Length: 100
Image (tube, rainbow, N blue to C red; front, side):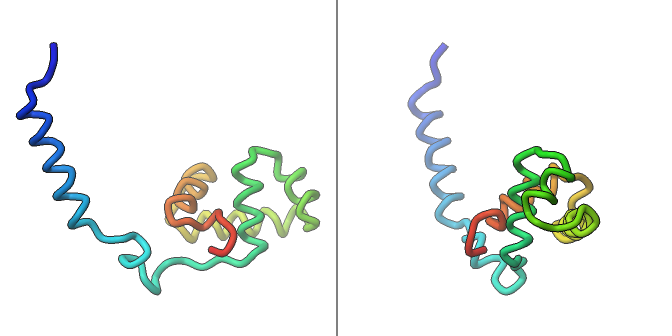
């Protein structure tokens, strides 16, 4: 069963209208966009890699307690209730990339 050209054209026009009127995420967040330091970006990448806390702390040259404190701060910051959600939210905001 194929969709009619009119239906496809309508869906395309709706998408184009929504895209044209959408706000740029950077502009929408403006000064409210969270900023992170180099060390926190490394913690985010370690979280994303799936290694244990012990291995991540060792790789980053920090104590396990300091690593876990930084992870807890990340969970508070982007309104996340799990490590996975914190990583996803950080990615949405572009916080995992260098220079964020």
